[in-house]
Image 1 (tube, one colour):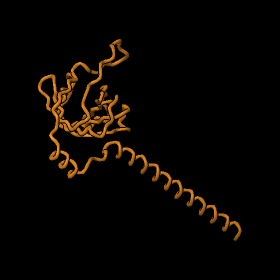
Image 2 (cartoon, rainbow, N blue to C red):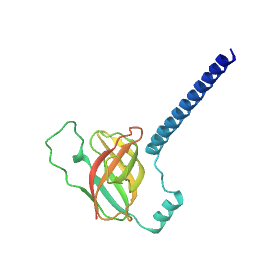
Image 3 (tube, rainbow, N blue to C red):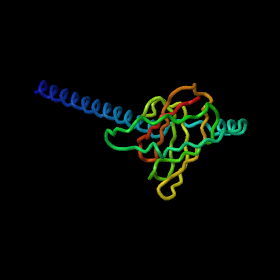
Image 4 (tube, rainbow, N blue to C red):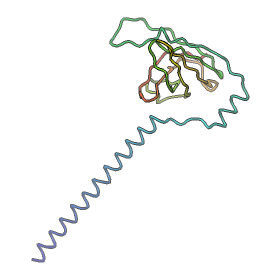
Length: 171
């Protein structure tokens, strides 16, 4: 009888260990997924002192980017590729005229090599104001650390978690 009871106790112990291990693995996977989502939704922003120092020491160049002809379409259209937008490698105050029917609200702007923003070189936030069928967005960008070349300008409306991309050439 004692042998049977000891086997049953050992089996119960192993089942508990298996349950605790499965729970620990599930918690680790859930934590990893939550951290990945948080990192994607909340990129690291520069400290306020750095932004103030940049703005106080350099007079920004004002530029306007008109994205009205870069409207996104669904499906595989036969539209020719649009020429890239051009910005200098400097501190900029950019007014963006967003594509038709863009919404007003808080936007995140990135300059990156990829369409997902994983290789973002510059990140900034701005508020767009919509009037009728058009919206404008004002944002400050510091492109002094970017080498001249071809990039993507990414825009993302707060809460959409999806970027619109536009070809960009930094000179």
